[in-house]
Length: 372
Image (tube, rainbow, N blue to C red):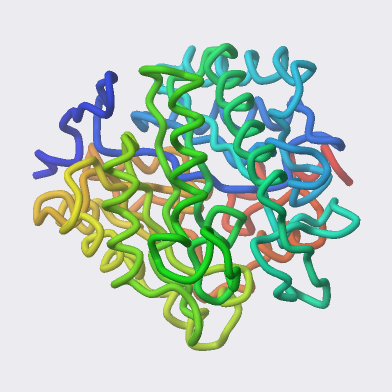
């Protein structure tokens, strides 16, 4: 029985019809320059048709090009983006799902920036970012607020701040990437000051519009952020009024380390992080990380390790996952292959749109026909 997985849950002023959400997943489906493409609309229509309660759209930059991860990163930094974003929000909501857009500044991982910006000049993949001035930080906080207002005006139901994957907000919190000597560095209280200021600026701009947060709980790096400090940050974000925390682990610098890659092949490999955060906050917590079976997802909710389930590649591999689980047809699910060669990730890293090698041949051939 899946009594909890398909029960409703309030988040902010909204009601989620079940405990399933689509976690943000970058697949390179936006058009060149970060436009809302037909492929992107088709993808998110399919994700919303799956029956999940909320679709969280992949990160949209708040400042192009200095904050953009790639030339296919969505944009929310100018009013010129509004028409495409509104079309995207309608596409998701017309299928019965709540629509949320994640907004982001990539910081030291901004591939489009001539010289990336970060809290401190800590090199990443052969590029050394320039440390932000406090004036520039105020500018970025303002850009986050302006982008969030566009998300609201475009018709989305929520906005999510991207504080995961080692992007800018996470870079401030991490003792590894924040080596500042001013009021924004040093102690944990100082290191989480800027993300809280960004959250405050966004909330002031959008009023009662729910603001979620993609939350990096563990960097899996020897000198990086650990769970004890991140739980304290989670409480600070809750005190500042965050609507939910979507918990994840790892950054681009740790994802491909052998022990992390091996761990990430295991079902529910990030659930312990969500459970730790859930133990210190009262706002809803989303768990993610290869939650491939209905039984596992139900157990996580039943045992109070999280309030919501975040499905990313699991849902992309098989958008019928929710209905197959609910109808007792789990044997029919097309599973993301944890032992595969990560073709999808390799394509994304090359700047190409991703496909899933586990898709049925007809779907795979139809997809490839659009690009080959």
